[in-house]
Image 1 (tube, rainbow, N blue to C red):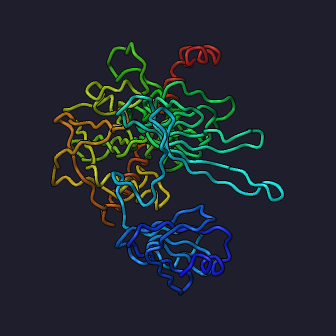
Image 2: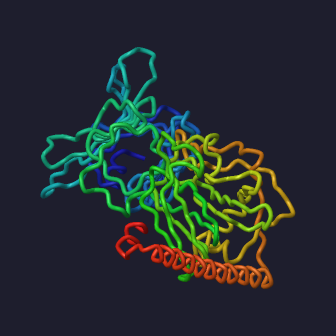
Length: 466
C-alpha cells in the first residue's frame, strides 16, 4: 500500500510513517483498521513520526470518527483520553510531563491552560508546574507551582506554591509555615484553640456580643439558708442576675470577700452571699468561656435533713476565672462546715444528661433539679476525671482528682409523694417566716414604746434607729 493512497485517504498534506523493519502497526480510524508492513522508504514530503512498539495492543492509540484520541481507550469522549491502571505517588503516574534540559533550579514539566482572548487569537490563562527546587546535582527536592494571569500582567504569575517540605505559600514563593499567606485572609470560621496564635489583631468595631464565646453558670440557695458561694466564671463574668422561685417572702444578695468568720482575703475573688426566707433564690452569671466539655454540678447538703442547701452548675470548674488552682478552690462553697454539711458532685454522665433535659424543657439546670430530682443516698460512685473548662495547646485540661470529702452521687426522680412533702415543707417555712417577721415587728414596737415612756421624742427615736 503506497503513501500516496494514505495521503488521499486522510486528506492530509503531510503524514509520515517511519517504521522499523519487520514492525506491524495498527492504526484505527473510526471502525476501519489499516495495517502497514515493512515500508522501505520515507515519503518525500516527510515530517512527523508515529511509532508503536512491537507487541503493543491494537488499541494502544485510537482515533475515532470525531477526531478524539484515546490512549489505552477505544471510546475517547474528549480530544485526548488516557486510560491506565492506578498509579501511586512513587510511580510515574498515568501522564508524565518532563523537560530534557540539564538539571538546574526551576527546571521541570509544566501544563498550561488557555483559550481565545480576542478574535481568533489565543493566549495562556493559567499553569501548573512541578520544578526542581535547587541546583544541587542529585537532589530530588521539588515544588509544585500554580500560576494565573491578570489582565494587567504580561505573563502568567505564580500565585501559590507547595514546597518540598509541604509548606503552602499564597502570595509567597518561600513559605516558612504549613500555611503562609502574604496578604489579607477572610474566613467565616476558625476551628481549634488558637493557643499558639500570635500577632493577631482585631479591627475596631468588629466584635459584637453575638461573637463572644460565652456561657452561663448558676448557683442557688434553698429557703432559709444564708450562705456564700463562688460565682461561675469568676473574673471572666459579667454582673449576675437574680431571681426567686416564687414572689412571696424577702431575700437579699451581697458581695463577700471571705467566708463568715474568716479574715478578709488579700486576693480577688468572685463570691456572693444569697438568702431568701421562704423560697429558693437563684443567681445566674454569663461569662466568657473556653468551652468546657463537661457539666459540673456541686451540691451542699444538710447532713441531718438531707436537704440541698446550696447548688452550683456550670460547664467549667469553680476555679476557672477564680485563680485556676483546683486544689485551693476544689468546690464553690465558702461556708462549708464538715461537721454539719456534705458536699456532693453529681456523676459526670448524669450531669450531661440533666443538662440536655433542661435545654429540651427550656429550664435552667438548677430549676430542673429543684422541681424534679432528689439525691440518691444509697450509693457513692468513683470519680471520673472531668474537663476543667481550660485548654492547653488545644488539649482539654482535666481535673484528675477531687478531695475525699466530696461525694460523687446521682439523682433520682422525685415521686409525687416527695413533691408533696417538699411543698408542705416550703409552706411551713413560709408560715414560720411570716410568724418570725410579725414577732420581730412586735418586738420593735414594744422597744419604741419603752423608749417613748422614758421621754424620748420622735426625733430622738429617728436618730437611734438610724
